[in-house]
Image (cartoon, rainbow, N blue to C red):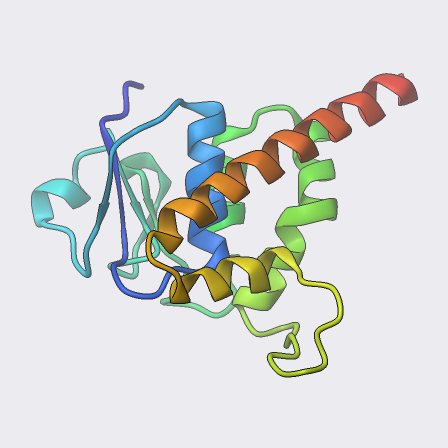
Length: 163
């Protein structure tokens, strides 16, 4: 499939869609990103366009990945990883060491301390705090891409040593 762009929500960015975009960039390549609150019917039915975290539709065959319509659906970062990563060992390691935590915070299963109590920043808190910085979305995406690259390299090394 040749993908043409990514659409995600405008306003405050969150770790789940930032990590989902970094995952798309890792497995598919860089694509233009549009940040807006709704997608058109044409965009929603075009499988070459990733629609992330908006429109309350989970339709992988149409590249629509939103989890907000059902609290039991994993967050967008895991939906994208499941869709794009075909290596089960790599996918399992990425979930265990990065994606599951991002999902748990996004869906409210883990509540991070947002006050003075944070001693060591998490991926989620770093991304969240970049909402208060000019160009924060792009900085968050750069951090997510670097983080994912490191986690993939570590996971592949771990998998190789196990075999």
